[in-house]
Image (cartoon, rainbow, N blue to C red; front, side, top):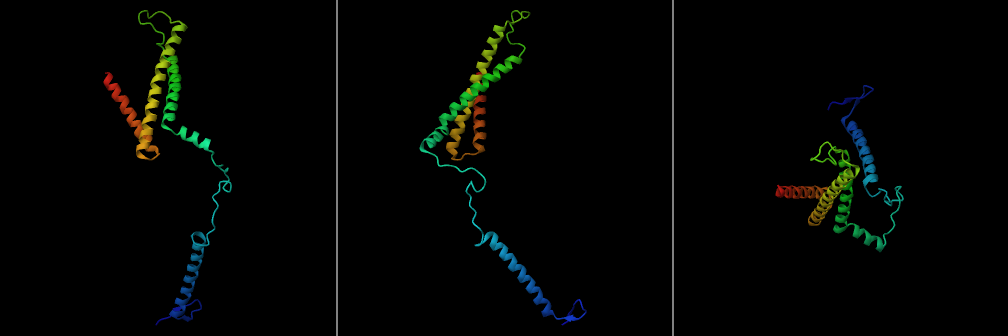
Length: 181
């Protein structure tokens, strides 16, 4: 067989070249195996996932009272009341704001040249605020109740519940609007 030429122009046999290649291959395989064993094998150090070790604050155990309050706040009834009250407050503020920028507040169609008094303007602002507040409260309660029902039915708590609830609530509002026309 023909030999390979080494760096000193002396012929090197095929067996010597293959053994040196096998040794370098075995060495790299051995090093790779050691790294793998260290990273994912038996020699891998066990990490303590305690929040205090990772820089966070420790979570103390919850008392029975805290667990009871948490269950109450996660109940459908509490969520519905919270959405209703929040919708009422937000709707009232939105109604007063829109009435404040509306140029027709206090406008009397019988006498268009008359300037409305402050009492009439405030009365219209209050009526619009109350109307918006009631509507937002109903929408908030509808959304919250349907989301809770869908979450209970699906058995999952994810973003899809809110999407489905929004579709149901929007459909109910659209259906109610269709019946009134």
